[in-house]
Each structure stands twice: as structure tokens, then as C-alpha cells.
Amino acid sequence: MAIPSSSKQYNIFLILLIFFTTILTTPVLAHLSVGFYASTCPSVFDTVRSATRSAINREARMGASLIRLFFHDCFVNGCDGGILLVDTTEVPGEQSTLHNANSVRGFEVIDNIKTQVDRACGGSVVSCADILAIAARDSVVELGGPSYSIPVGRRDARAPSRAQAESDLPGFNEDLRLLLSKFSAKGFNPQEMVALSGAHTVGQAQCAVYRERIWNDTNIDPTYAESLRGNCPSTADPASDRVLAPLDPQSPNRFGNSYFQAVINRKTVLRSDQVIFDGGSTDNIVRGYSNSPTTFSTDFANAMVKMGNLSPLTGTQGEIRRDCKRPNKIC
Ligand code: HEM
Ligand SMILES: *[C@@H]1O[C@H](CO)[C@@H](O)[C@H](O)[C@H]1NC(C)=O
Image (cartoon, rainbow, N blue to C red):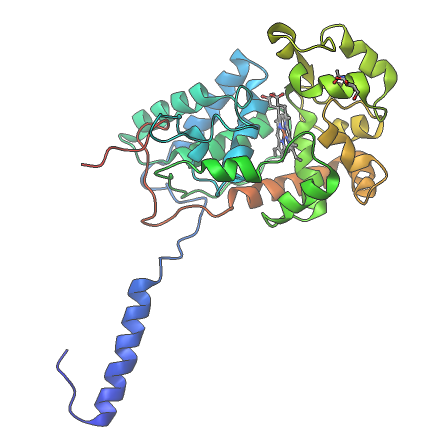
């Protein structure tokens, strides 16, 4: 562009300069869309669905584990596949943090799906973060829960977010106030938090997590507590620490609204599950979902999509990891 001579030309020059500088410095506000891989990996949804299905057929609990893995990915600095990165001595990751260590699982399944997707599409074009988001949706559906469209186009973080994993994930001993504030920090209102807690309609918890509750709490059905004590003795030891109990005693591998009935009946193993129905502000939301499976299904599906939209990396941010466990090598 020639340096303009008249002042009118100069004004236009300035406006154009500002215009282009703004365009070039604003990160592309690329957002997620269902058709993101339509041309680069058209079979991604089919491949993830069948691989997720076989993983659940091999082990029924895996569906629950993948749903939780997605939650623990998205709640920590957004859905960026950060939780999938293994800890190294140089870069300690998210997997060894308080709420993940010896607890969150399903990593080999994600690795396996990634291999299958890369093979189907002739290269590494789908991010690990997207594979996890699709596998979590497919798990919900496979276990009998609601179906929803999951927008994709996320990219993978180059590094884990360890400090945020320690601070942002909710803990089973936390009270309603703290849980509400952790979800509010991610943009979820109390209704959405209760709907998302309904994911505990599937899956298991370990004795180390529920020991105190079944031995000492008063807001638990006494017969139910008694029935769990045999395999979860009051003193900690490595063997009994790992003994599993269903989060929803009625149907740990079946996605439905029975969790809310369990909460109302005080048949919960997590304190964090009972605090949403313990005389506080969310009691009515729990009653509502226990009375209306369709409202729960709709709200849960919407909240899962919203969770999947938590600050994804898009456009040229991050990378498409080839190995979900490690960042790509530079060079
Ligand atoms: C409200 C706050 C939450 C707390 C405090 C919490 C805590 C826990 C704990 C302590 C366990 C058992 C872990 C173990 O014993 O190893 C668990 C399991 C599980 N959580 Fe949550 N959770 C919360 C919300 C959620 C949300 C929002 C989802 C998903 C949308 C979710 C999905 C699951 C699933 C599916 C399991 C079972 C996993 C398996 O069997 O492998 N949780 N959660
Ligand atoms: C129950 O509470 C008592 C008193 O606080 C405590 O000493 C004990 O360790 C608790 N039992 C379990 C299993 O947590």
C-alpha cells in the first residue's frame, strides 16, 4: 500500500490498517460443529461408537468410567485431552492429582479408539479430546441414557493443567455450598449441577471413599450402610480400600433416573451425593428429577453438551496429538 498523500486518503488508510491489524491479532473464533470432520474423517462417529460399544461389552463398568473421564477432562481447563497425558518426572500431570489418582480410568480404551480412528481415516486428524467427548456420549447412549449430538473440532493441549486439576475438581467430602460454587465457576447453575450428578446413576466407588460414610454418617439408610460394612471394614487396609460399591444401588450399569430415588432414600455411598438432598436448596430439584425421567434426560443431555463446550482449544491452538498419552514431539 502506497503512503497516501491527501488527508482523506490518509483516514481511509488508517481505518484499513486498524481493520487488518484487528483481524490478524484476534484468534479465530472457530467453534465446534458436528460436521467438523465431514471431509477429513467421515467415519469418526461410526468408529468411536463401535469401539466404545465393544469396550463396554468387554467390561460393563467402562461406560461409566468414560463418562467420568470426560467430566474430569472438561472441568480442568476445558475439554483439551489434558487428563490423558501421562505424568513424567519433568511434567507431572493431572492423572496423579487427588481426585484422579487410582480412581479415574479408561485410558487404554481411549488409546485403542484413537488407533482405530487414525487407521480408518488414514492419519492423525481427530483430536484425543474429541474422541473422549464422543466416547462419553456413546457410553451414555449404550447404557440406555439420552442421545445428543456432540459438536467436535477440539484440539489437544500440549501440556496438562495439574494445578487446576487439584483446585477445580469436586471432592466427595465437600458440602453443597462448595460443590455449587465449583460448578458455578464453570457456568453451571444448581439445576445443571444436580442433572450432571445424575451421571452417578452408573458406576462404582471404592471403599476408601465411602468408609467414613457407612461407618459414621447419620444421613444414610442404616440397613443399607450395614449391608456394605462387611466388605468395607472400619479400618483402612490396601485390600478392602479398593472394594467397590455401586453409586446407584438399583442399576449400576443402566442409565436412568433411579439415582435420584436412591438419593431421596439416602442409599448413597458418597457424601457429595447426599448433600444435594439433605434439607438444602437443591432438594426440590432432586424430587423433580426423580418424578420426571424425561426432564432429567433432556437436562442431562443439554448439560453434557454444555460441558463439552468448556473452553476448547480450536483453530490453530494446541495440536492434534498422535499419541493421546504424550504431546507430539516438536521437530
Ligand atoms: C458433584 C460433584 C461430584 C463429585 C464430588 C464426584 C465424585 C465422585 C467419586 C468420589 C467417585 C468414585 C471414585 C472412586 O471411588 O474411585 C465418582 C465416580 C463417578 N463419577 Fe462423579 N463426582 C461428581 C460429579 C460427577 C459428574 C458431573 C459426572 C459426569 C457427568 C460424574 C461421573 C461419575 C461416574 C460415571 C462415576 C463412576 C466411574 C466408574 O465407575 O469408573 N461425576 N465420582
Ligand atoms: C468415625 O468417627 C470417629 C470419631 O470422629 C473416628 O475416630 C473414626 O475414625 C471414624 N470411623 C471411620 C471408619 O472413619
